[in-house]
Length: 474
Image 1 (cartoon, rainbow, N blue to C red):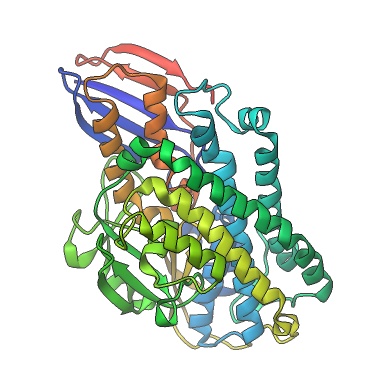
Image 2: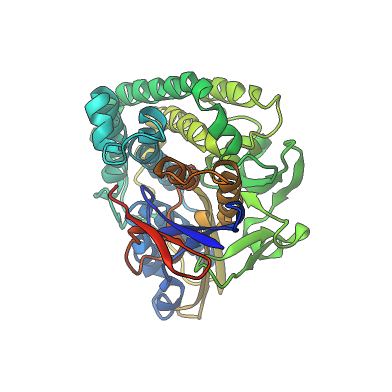
């Protein structure tokens, strides 16, 4: 038996893929390991409810807005209040900014080097700097689009990373007309970049057929929040699950009762838990979350450009669910367009300038669940408090955790397709990484960052001796 260890680069956090080959050079097993350990659920105990949004935002520097907003919603439930309408709209506006900046980072900076420079291109150049050298306009567009999302976040929360702005009951400061007008003036350029990138992806699909068919193309469930009448939702709503035919398996599920339909399994070879749909058991209850799931679960987006793009997206599957995880990239670009269209709606709404942005209350419930669609998928924060609002228990089910079973399915499928009996090349190993990058996992969110990135690919013989090793330079 031989073992190949592949450190996964160009993701948020630290992970490792292990592929075991038998003596005939065939794949016997492939696994995606998360090599960090989490401490957030434990060290939040003893802090107060009102501290939790700012504390949990520090889970990650890429996803602080997601944890901030979800934590505030858990606080709403414990206070038993509904935030003022303006506060709800402003929270949504910040989340849309997070979608723009996070999805732009994933596509332009982390994944487009593979898509546009080639999976087998020189790894020293297969990065954002190589992209800038070959397509400077695209690289610049990616920087500008991400910056626009960050500007929305900063205009509301006073900083781009770790804004301490959403609080139980609402938000702590209103929006200003000056900030709205400044951001509205830049919206057309952001939309131009997003629609150009969407067109670029759709034009390039003809050249990615093999990857589309092998990067996690398998039947599974898909889970997300949906709003009234099945509309695309990102900050409220009820849970829906659909299957690979886009048939509804479960609908109108209460997010606060997530523990009745989501189980969490543990394996000894990864720090990341394995959530599953309880009705189908473990591991058969595999489901996916995130952009691909949201577009498969919703009936429509509710804005014209995004709905037209979703129609093209679904046409490739004859109306069934789009099951290739490679198309997370496509779904991400559609969601950027949807987010920018929604941003325009909020900019045109005078209520977002209302000074009434917080509902005041004390502790009215001893438990509360916040649920929210982070860029990477459905996020749950579940808190228990004492009578004074001091945290007694915390459970976080993070977007990337929901996708853990699916990511392991994906690396196994890629390994069987590309590595069975073939010479192991850097390009083939990069495709293994690319299968994980398609999910845009945030491993720091999932388990919190501890440790260092593994930097070597090690090939072991059946006797355990090292046959070959390579240092990863990109």
